[in-house]
Image (cartoon, rainbow, N blue to C red; front, side, top):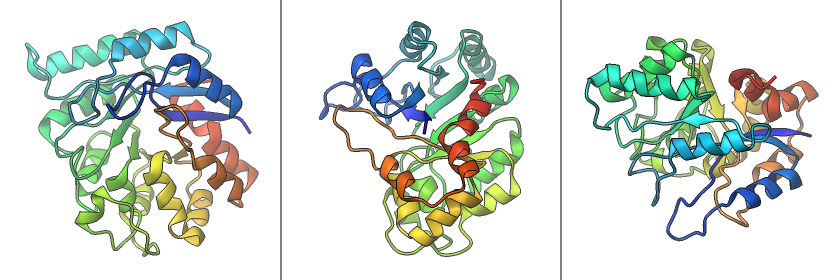
Length: 279
């Protein structure tokens, strides 16, 4: 099975871990049949210990155009000379330089904050899918994902891609606010916001990477396996591979899942290929 990984990081993120080099990433991709990956930049102080700059990731993707898919990111609180127009122009410049998406958006603001909406408006105009990290600090929301819902309605041309603890806690109908930073282990209750919003809005996707994505599927295997099949047109394979020798549970999860071949291909690479123009 080939894969497109929508969530990796190249560079140094955290002070406790060594950096992820390009050579290590490419060897790991080859070993795991990952055809292409998205090396996400991080430019907000809440993101990580170190910044990973858009310009560096765009340059990396130009060096390896057959392996890496370019994304851009902007901190919505960045100093600009002309407000929303400046934010738009920055995103426009990145799109003209080849960016196929926006993210990882990991800013310490409410999801529907006006400053965040300047980014959404730019992504809406330039048709950039947007990958966001939602938890108790970054892109914050409530367990019903009220803020996300408002943005899905307001910016229909943005394919919002949900990631992290807060987003995935909301897969369960009984999600609590304190779980927006955790990994709930009890069975999934019906009526979760993720399913509800996927029913109501065609522009919501989900990134299965990291402990959060893995936990959402495996905490209640009967639910998770059915969810993978039922929502296969909206799910994207990802790992959040960011440090050497990092365990990646997603491969085992997919090997275990009893999925149709159609669903498996869609999640593994077809959805990402369609969203990011990888034909």
